[in-house]
Image (cartoon, rainbow, N blue to C red; front, side, top):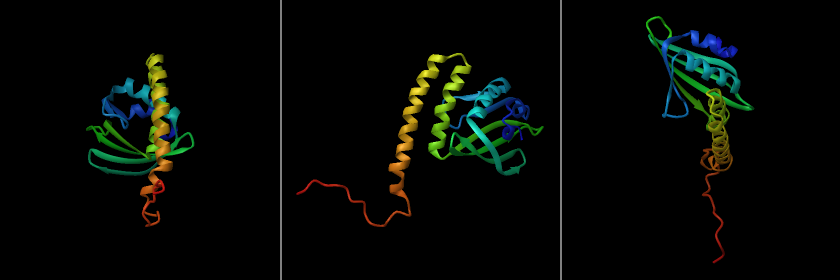
Length: 165
């Protein structure tokens, strides 16, 4: 309910003191503890909006949640794998996101916000440039190249333009 309401403080209250959030976008770092998670989720809820949970599965101290929302006009789907402590609080949270176009848009918008919140405006500027480049490459690839692999595409072989013989 806290995530659907965009309430970072309430979301963190459902987590253990030593909570870890594994970044869905990189293996380079993990967010740890209430302070880091509340700062992160404050930015996340500014970027990932209209979150609605669609499914939940739980087996003991493990749960999987399925959510969807929007990054701008793009629909972003998220799967959360939760490891719970003995009190039922979230101890570790691993996120997966799709489609790639929405995930890179999320990265492009979120990264500079997180850097700015940590007092690193120069890093935020670099992330704007890098994120814009990555976002444009992925969006272009999604429009141009991914349709080539579609099972709905004609079974005819792709003809490449060749110079006259």
